[in-house]
Image 1 (cartoon, rainbow, N blue to C red):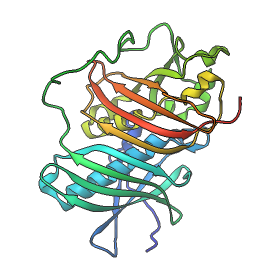
Image 2 (image 1 turned 120 degrees about the vertical axis):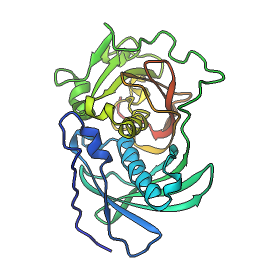
Image 3 (image 1 turned 135 degrees about the vertical axis):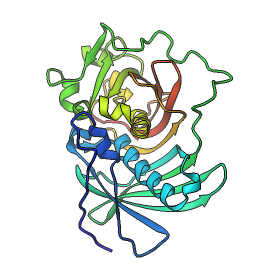
Image 4 (image 1 turned 30 degrees about the horizontal axis):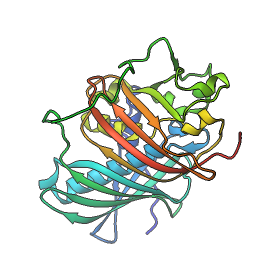
Length: 298
């Protein structure tokens, strides 16, 4: 079934809520009652270079899957995506996309929904979502000091992404949010090499921060926000993600999110990267692990 994609972005048209537009999906007609179809838009500000940011595509898919669950199983409307396993089959262009979603399981504790991001008739991102209840209400029984000495907000060693530095020119996501990288860890910025680890801060704009669902989807996106950690080893360029699994633990409180990224091994062809997202209270909000292809340029 082919439908021209048109999206009504109201009320998410405020300049201070650009991520809300990623999460605004419009239901489309479907020939199969067991399959939901939604139209969406991912604008060019959500790109790294010319490529759509992977975490943003996962977040848009999560918004579509959430709409589908709430419509088809309203008794499970309080559930939210707690895990996302995503495979990238191609690189979509900024602009109109379509999401196709279907239910795999409806349970009392767990629901499973698959979502495909489609553009020009091709499935380019496929994500299997696990829905359940977020860990919002109870304090952790145990939690280590994951942030350690990383301040809750960018400090003197932070470099804000803007048009005056290479990171801001490359990472257009900084046009739709506030982003800063810690230069103490990002030694590649000074032409040096260091351990494959990076840390940065990211914060949604005010309008996005005020919407609890959008703020949670934003945190899901933030778990893919670090530059590829092999950059600290002198490997630069596009690092295509082969597969990423993301967990959403709880909704963030308003404020900056801290992102800490590290690798266990950087091979000749592939590397792994773990990212941890922590809010201003020190709570773990999201975490991810991905396998990506190492950039070949040095």
